Length: 401
Length: 138
Image (tube, rainbow over all chains, first blue to last red):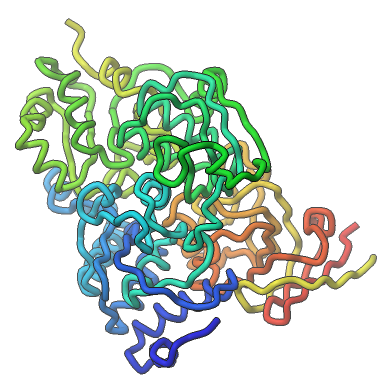
């Protein structure tokens, strides 16, 4: 891989140990994928997990004096301020201390502490055609497909290193010719909700694993949260950096164009039957629930509005805790829109800056939970799980009149 | 007992050897037990088997951009990492974690690894020099 004199200097440690480590990773990955050179990028999203692997790398960068060169946002970890009030965090000290250090080191290196897993909707929005480095399951395919920015499916660490250096190795989806479809997905059922799109993503991720699916048969433009859920779930069961829905996503108007005139290497068909079977895969119970967990990925403003509509004038049963995870930015807007008041009055807990896969939910381990997110069901920290649409989650949680 | 040496493409340099564990399924290392390396993912072809110390032959990585690194780092803290990895379809998130944690990783073997290597064979992966040696376990 060719490096400019300036890049070689960074790699030899002349700009400090932190920058050297960042450059070393970018060069290693670039060489692994036979990149010829580095290219500048304008923004990055590091999907900070607040766990061991995350700490290992960001700590080395921070202690080595690295600092973000371009806007670099972060994922949710734990809202300590909130959870310290409602639980005894010392019982989870080992994991809590890792998460605390992670947040500290991200602040040290000058990351933008968005603590949102949907930063591409508010805090960090790339433009069409812009080269960026976005990690996070839903973020990579969303910015590639819905926006038309160029990013590979970055890890937290490569995105972070790219944020430090302001560059990324040029390979994969940074080249237009690699952004064409590989597998044709015929959707032969009406896609009605975000939950349907989650199940579609779960099925397609598992079937395609690696590749660029092209969806045919989706007749209505997906909503933003339908896209978000499709994107997230394809990167739980698979590793799907991009997709096309010709006519709706930005890089192909027709199926022919999506495949650049080539034949798909595979074709799959999805009917209601596949979605039903997919739903059953993660479900371990269909009985009573003790908690509801929404907001994986973080709910956006429209979704908070949807829950508020369903809960207006209703009460959550006193034996059920009803969690809704969202970003700080979204929560402010939900307050202004009047949604938050309705959600508070109904007895939900709207929390910001937090991921469902964190120690703060360890005390739910023995409990049965329900979620509209198969991703949450997959990574959950509670016991038995029911999966269902938002409407079904609400129905399971409200007081019977 | 027969020995064969195959060429390959180095992704992450280093040397590792051990018993082969072969799976056509994609792997998410977050869903392994960090202490024992036992695969916990329901329905995975390696469910219940330990990856620790093995030369892992598999198709590709999967799942979120965080979890491979977290999963492998936890295994490393417990000395429970695989010895080396051979993949058919390298994927950035997995490559990044292997590069940082220095786990030898190769692809593009001269032969299809799923035909050339079987679980239980003894395999040396010399990623630095781009060779893989397979000793038939049968």
